[in-house]
Image (cartoon, rainbow, N blue to C red):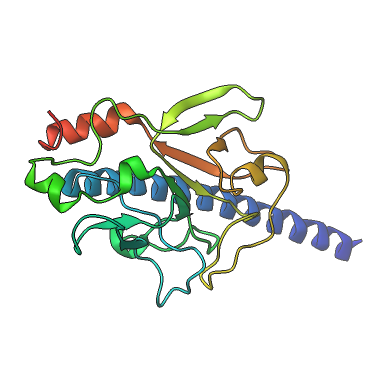
Length: 223
């Protein structure tokens, strides 16, 4: 009887510790996502655009920088983003590579917000790649086909403890989940943000267009 009581007490203690760890991890990732949003907005205010995604398939020692290539037209210095859907360029932004579960943050940003200014555009006095009328193409839904946010320029996803569809530090994509978790890792323009449950623990945030543009105005990047 004593052994049974001790075993039950030990199990209760383990469950309590696990629950505390989950709460701490979720708090940590929420703080990370807040810092990521500020880092992205700061980058845009400095550079006139949001950063390109990083190649998700590269290992940590060679990855983490925004993926750029030479433009097909213009000058030799002109660059364009190679990806719209990848992972957060942690080295470019100077932030942590991974979420509390050791996986990279999925990152989508439209070319209309991330391609660098060309030399011609700079010479013509442009200070931002986009203007006040530019709209994003990503949409956030609630899992029941109701729109939470539309015309979003950029989306950031932590795939949670389950890590379904996330890329790890070796550049490998983990097995996709199903349903709404799969929606957040299938490289399209629809994402799901909702209350976590047993089948969904992704944490999704996004760049709000009005906040992005107001920051750009404050920085003198937009009129």
